Image (cartoon, rainbow, N blue to C red; front, side):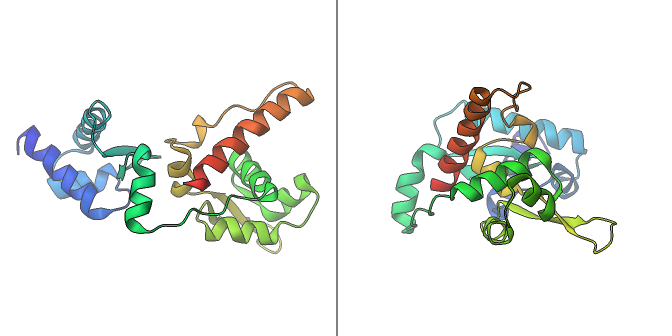
Length: 193
């Protein structure tokens, strides 16, 4: 299969799948090496980003997904009659930030940092598919541990957690407020769409 046919096949796979697909699955389907599949995926991503199309390809951790371009979200919502999600509460923003920057974490870890019960907020974030259970700790009671999801990455338009803004090294209140505002603004923007 020539490069053009491989790219076309990858587009068809990403479009038909609707969710993210790992390069290994694409490689197996097209009978090519995984590194070759990655090269084609990166090439397609660049091609989409350098053209004025209504769709693009994004990378989420180690998988790829075809999505609509963010600037057309209002028109898509109108056609699909989608309502805006209610913005996250201050408590939800704080819990999401604690989990995103410290994952994987237990509910008790989050509660220790915040100083209040977080059961309801964790349930809400889980139902919004921003966090998920990542397993259990090998401790008495085997507490659940939580981490962010691919949907979290998609909402923030980032490929991995490493792209989150860095936390300040200095404990100065002013710097902490700046980082907190940055995280809150990104979360509100992501959940408002």
